[in-house]
Image (cartoon, rainbow, N blue to C red; front, top):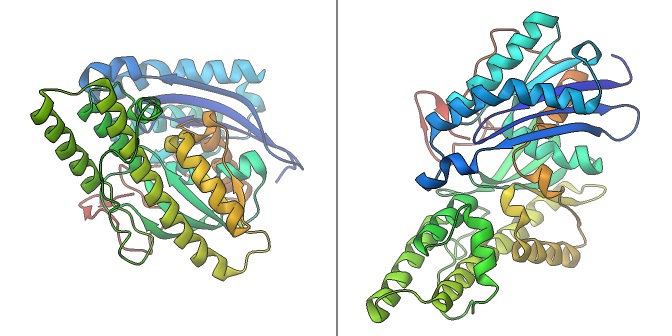
Length: 364
């Protein structure tokens, strides 16, 4: 294997079409180019991502995305060592768009093809940005996922807790809709909460009375709905201050849950006696200021290094896919042109599925 590896990455698992080029030599990896085409405007009127619309948008943009990434990196396909692509989990139409594009490139150029688990991309981002040593504790917290992972190697992940229902990002989106705020819900809730009193409404902290690191956000969302309805029944509607107070109460509840569960996860992780204990967080919800501040404070108290990639690498992007593919490729792992797109693909396939399973296997 050559000392320097340059990987083209493709990501299309949800509503962001992305391509990136990542290179790793003898030192830390470097993102040579990262291009992301979002679809927020396409889905805005529907209050959430519409899979068919997302799939069509991916098909229209993905080749342009790849072309722009290569152009910004100043490279041609002849200077790429392998092409990595998200093969799941995700919305199957979007995943297929990326996989077929990557297969086309591989077939036309003879480049090795590397299928990547989207969650592995997030989980390995701290190694891309900060060269974090194994093992580290990872909180993947986004619109579709929420789980604590002990990352022991590029292909070894042990889940020690996660959400049993809604992911926090999904809960933020639903909460914003309940309060008449804009989408995406996370930034809207955070902005509204700045003017609110988190103690004005008594909202629950589900599962804090039970041991372990599992979380639940569905009941919190229902409690917010009932609190809102009570205000509407009393006043005939929501004032701007009511919105702010409800948003602040909801955000504080999510923060408290993540803080306490992270504290428990850290205790379990430290049983491994890592040489340099490190806690990393990735996913869109990692951008929330109150949540991040609470977790930074916890890590300072616990004497654990805190790592949070820049926001551009916390949300869906192809740089993380290129890097995860680089780790696989450097270990001698590649896939054939029969690589399948997978709507479900848990990182830890040894643990029971958190959210049930179906004919296509365990959910992520």
